[in-house]
Amino acid sequence: MSSVPVASDKITRFALASTSAPYIEKLLSGTVTTNLGVPSKAFVSDHTTSSRAGTEAIITAVEHVKACPTGCAVVAAADAPKASMWSPLEHGLGAGAAGFVVSNENLIAEVEGHSSCAYEHFGERFRPDDDDLIHDLEVRKFAQSSLIGATTEAVSTLMSEIGASPDSYRSVVIQQPDARAPAAIARKLGAGEELLASGSVVAEVGDLGAASVPVGLAAALDASKVDDRILAVSYGSGAASDAISLRVVADRKSAPSVRSEIDRKEYIDYIQYLKLKGAIR
Image (cartoon, rainbow, N blue to C red; front, side):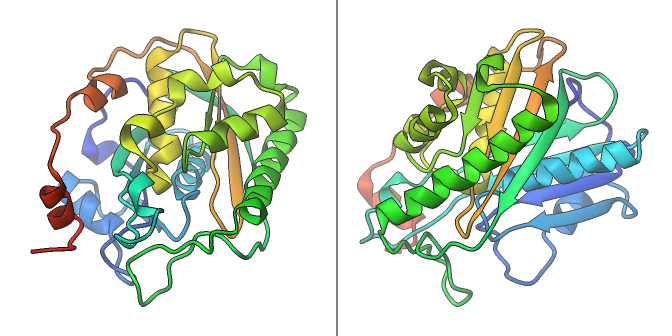
């Protein structure tokens, strides 16, 4: 991952991740690249339908640069999941975005490897194609078994492939549907909960869906030092998980930081909240 801005005409790959895109059928990444001035010949892709989409987009960018060493990929993860105003699920949801440049130049972190796990698992959060609201069957123990099972399998495979263990890492960033899930997964992995601190953002900004791990990863990179290793683990109901291992190779000099952006906030009242959510006009 690169530490400096990149000229738009140098971008050869663009990946956009979101579970809350405005269209079910219409390319959104092309709209973004046109506005950014990215060449039309750049390969673009939309990654949707799963909160795992953020790491999915990162992995496609990594694989692009691996196949085309002179290439430059940009990843954008932006999400604002929405549930019914009468659902307890709604109150934990947030909105946020993060972007990354993936290339072989001006690195701040190297991707050491990645691994994935996917299988069928019913009974979790979902959104039908005729509804813009997410639903949850509220089968907590059943859903948690999938969350823990998929993430630990992805991480275990990755650890085996690169010869690492959870205690090899300075920071661990895990999908954050709430504040408890990352801690439960960390315990199963044998990682200390203190490793979650730098990448934990859910308490301040809520569940960011596909942007959850990317924003947490950006926060962890802000707090990292050279030679630190960061483990990023996503999860999407259905079920699937990606695990990505990174090693920091240079200080991140860009500003503002994720924490400073979180602190730069404006409080709104309940009526404004209802208007933003479309509950009233």
